[in-house]
Length: 157
Image (cartoon, rainbow, N blue to C red):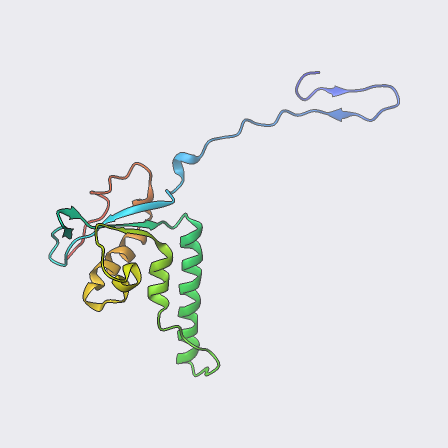
């Protein structure tokens, strides 16, 4: 029996057989699950530690980690609006931003700061690292597989 041809046997119903279309590959259009931020000092020079560039591997907007972290931070923003409107039943999480950054960070490389990523993101004098991570993940173009890590993010002073 050929595609689309009906088989008719005496006393039986008509069965129509259709070929399934070939599955298309759209993976070339997908965002990468993660990317790497090359961290710069506030003056635009690369942040180097013991001769190595400091980088942060982050989960991108197409990852489940980033989706959950974004949902969390949006809920916290909603709480802030409710609090500002006078709702006293809602409690704000003072560490929400740090928790968001931790949730989207796979690793911090070449920067063995005591206390790790949480301490880095909590230290106001290192806020330029958190700012660069936030800026990087906000640009979906940074998460295409063929993006050159060195070219994908430039800190604008």
